[in-house]
Image (cartoon, rainbow, N blue to C red; front, side):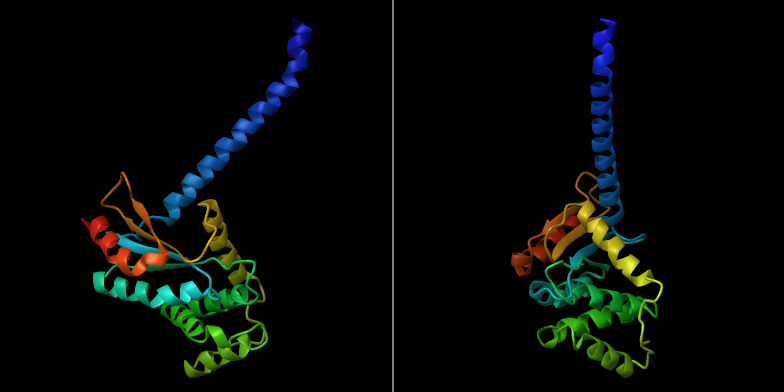
Length: 206
């Protein structure tokens, strides 16, 4: 009997490690959801979007989200989620973080500027568009935008948060609220955002 238990001990230990790892993943996912899918402090509700600056659908919904934010006077929280199949969206997100360092409103203005020129941008001319934006807004744009990798780390952190809550497409849009603890967030189908968004905001703000 002792030998049987001894032989089974490594298997039992491995099972315990697997179960513990699964529990840690579940805790990490719950923590990520709690961190991302709730309104900023002091706001009863908010719109949260994970976007890719090279994504045409993101370009389409961006002004709709901004208008809804203004209409309801609730925050629009934008997260970077550059997709691997896009060849300049990651660099554009890093540049947006550079402008965020001056002010969040300037960073978001840069994101909208990139969306408005999305079809003309490519990896070779992205920097020239950023330089033009920088010049227009009288902000320096250094030759090396992110020498310490700080802005890239911020983009990566956003992308990791998205992965932690199982995002796999852009845009992913949520309406979040602290008025419904039993259901604090709801995802908006970006394909039906024109018909869904305001209805869902009304429901989440009641």
